[in-house]
Every structure is written in C-alpha cells, then in structure tokens.
Length: 85
Image (tube, rainbow, N blue to C red):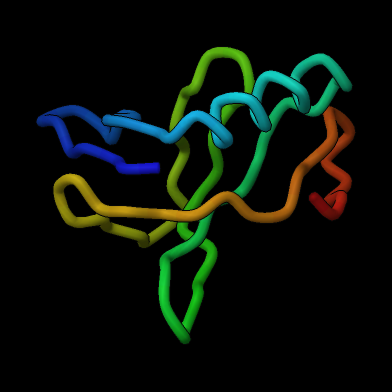
C-alpha cells in the first residue's frame, strides 16, 4: 500500500489488488483493523488500517513520508486480539 500525507491526516493513496482482496476477506471474517509496517530489513509497525472504511491510524509518534510504501502485517480482531495473516 502507499500512504499519502494531507494537511489534516494520512490517507490511503493506492493499494495493489491482493491487498484490497485481503482487506475485504478479513472484513467478512469480522476483523476490523490490520496493522501495517515499514518495508525493508528493519520493519517497524507504523499503524493500522480499518478493513471496511480504510481509515488510517498511525502509532503514537510516527510520521510518514508522502506516498510512503507500507506492507500489511498482523490482523487485530474486533476484540483487540492479534491474529496471524
């Protein structure tokens, strides 16, 4: 996925087909949030994306670059539990 900075927040700029399909499938299973992380050797959780609204929430203190690439990570259930993808 690629995120874009706006004056007020961070929004989803683009995603590839498998990411869209994965979020749709997870939403059908009742999973609300999916974490995403930076790319590369030192992957770091940056935030999470809502599976239905595609709302982006960054972890506290995280700033991203405009049009930054991120990868989907562990899934968080509606009860806050983390599931493996």
